[in-house]
Length: 427
Ligand SMILES: *Cc1c(COP(=O)(O)O)cnc(C)c1O
Image (cartoon, rainbow, N blue to C red; front, top):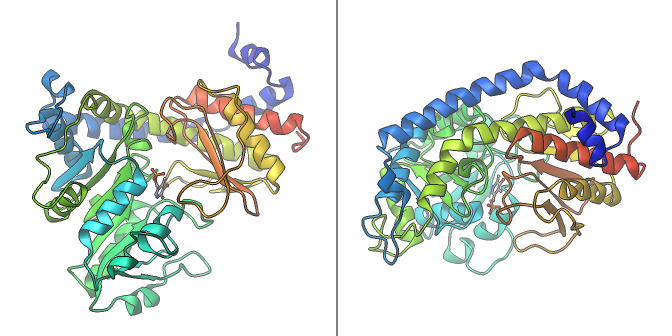
């Protein structure tokens, strides 16, 4: 049996299969370039694991206080080697990206300090960490001030605005690589490096921190290769390779990482504590798989943009834009179309495929959110998933796909669901 017949057997309309196949064919050159980046990053990760001397003994962990957790320490050494940083904190006690970002900010800011976002409003969940939205325990409550410089209308950095925003109180600059739930573009590590160079030329002791969520392994370099003092992300996104069941990382300078470790645990309790329990094998193996898993997700995102753009939906980034992360935003124009898309993604899942996603309140988010994910790890967005805040213009954020065939099937299923409900006409 041919795989195309299998799509039809699984309920996809024949015309949707034919349309999708013609689009996939046109992407071969693009995909080849992504495979080359994946190959480079696979070698970089392999070299990092070898440099850290990963051995069989590292695949088991400790419990209790977690003293002498060799696997945990070796994994952190491998992260530091890959990101070219002095040190790293890679822990299962960090539950997600938001948690890792909160630790990095709370650890490195003191009362009276100011933090600056030079690239506009940060990711939704950071609003409560910072206190942009009133929240219990925010940095604002602890006397840390926040300043923001928006991008210029053409999407460029507002260099004058950034210069004017830096003052004697500015301590930390937070730069978000991926667009998150906003409609700006995502930045390349090199562009982030330009901001870092600029702000450090004004105030050399500024701590430059990058929210690297969804960006890892997409490019040949990381923001830490361009002077970031800390790069921060979630292990249930790119760097966990789909195997990490929990976790976050912060890679950076020795001083920053030490402050993060005592903030995560307690003053006096630093990196030497923190049991990995049974996580070491999954975190190490996930890191090993992450470059090719990320490439699968990136290809799925490009396929989604290519398929939906041609039938009239606005895609961000556009189908032919070079990627800086794995997120694909597609503006679907109505709540009903958005729910149909998410229904298709959910129906393509290996877990909970029979569930129909609905919009609901989510901690950390202001609007109701709909999330489609039938994942092995709850909330894992390196696995095929789609989510959207319920607000005009009804943009869905699509990401993930541990394998390209699954990402492809998900996109086709979403397209087919919308097609059958009359939201799409095939040319
Ligand atoms: C996902 C994401 C976060 C938050 O991560 P969670 O793991 O969902 O808490 C922060 N910043 C950006 C840009 C993200 O994409």
